Amino acid sequence: MSNEKIHPTNRSISRRDFLKAASLVGGAFTSSYVLTGCNSQPPTVTTPTPKGNEIVTLNALYMNQAGYSEKVLKDIAARYAKASATPVDISFTFVKYDELHDKIVTSAAATTATFDVILLDLIWTAEFGKKGYVIPLDDRITPEIKSDITPAIFSAFVYNKQTWAFPFLANFQCFFYNADHLDKAGFSAAPKTLEEWYDQMVALKSKNIVKFPYIDSWNQKEGLVCDYVRTTGQCGGDLFDADGKPAMDTGAGLQALQFMRQLIDDGLADPAATNTDEPGAMNAFVSGAVSFNTNWTFVRGNMLDPKLSKISASARTGLLPPSKDNPAPTGSVSGFQGLAVMANSKNVAQSWDFIKFATDPTIQSENLQSEFPVWTSVQQSSQAKKINPDADLYATTLANVHHRPRVANYQQVSAIIQEEVHNCLLKQTKPEEATSNMVSRVSALNG
Image 1 (cartoon, rainbow, N blue to C red):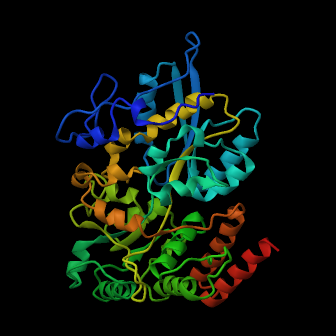
Image 2 (spheres, rainbow, N blue to C red):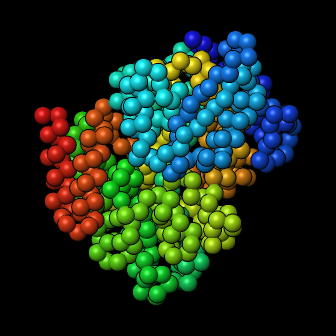
Image 3 (tube, rainbow, N blue to C red):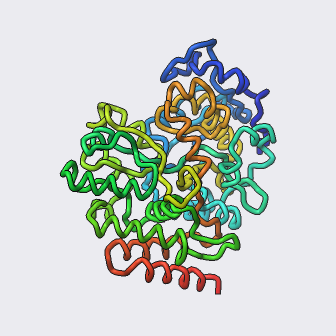
């Protein structure tokens, strides 16, 4: 098993040199854009000693719902295979997010892993670490590397003082709006508070600019938990208290669900939201049917692409508006993604080498238009800000994310929250009843 650490001296360039320029050169690599300055080189590929012409097959599992696109990941895999000293074939399987967890668990139970490299959502860190589904990575990561990744991101993949995945995507929810719609309604800027946002939605509807000003992914899936956590963060709090006990029946948790329900009751949120996932919500927004969408970072690249969006000229990114009583500049929810190696993989060394390659800052620099890198130095570089003028907004949002509870029985906790929130949005229960049910049911899980 290879224990080679990620370290700047193992790369063809240092991250400092990378920040001077991010155009990739060399026979096996083609950059998607060119920045000014000297040319940088692709990340070094260090693989196990080849055994003749034997081809190593790596099977990787990712989702096709948010995050890096299938095209981007297949391109990374192809480039890694071409650069690798060991003949390697990387096969990606893409599934919807809600299928990921069960496929990983099934792979972990097999004698030989179905998948070698997996996408690990931060909410599964405790479960997968506790059950030994993936290998710890601490002896492969230097303190210097950790220091260039925001602690909030890196710590999301730490459980019981061990790191179970390497950060791959600094995913979080953002605020997207149609500036042309706001202008027609008489507003010169995005809302600064939750209350102002409500007033803008009322105006957009009353002036018949749109039938429903807002849409979100409120189907009974994990995305609904994310939206509830995010709205609670906008209201200045969390669903669980400092002792890890459910507390959504008072304060920000209750206020958040009351706000979500009010948007349904007042016809401001499209009722189709209760049966919509993240891509569906994005499609409604980029079509111009709604004025607002709260969604993951992947929306930005799509909404600005005139081939994919009807509103590319008027689409904007802003800060998620906090409630007037929340002193924070914004509130959001984390959806950080990591790459992990399955503990029963027969290709641990090669899997780790691929993860090093895929997470390298040079590789991540190619997708700054749509996604946010995990490396702090890349996030703060002037080149990144040229490519993504919203980088400062992203940084502010990242600094104010709220996390879903990090508990080993998260799947059960999430299922309860999904059911109770969804019932409330379908008008089957009131917010006060739904939040009370959540507290009692989650508390009962632990006796």
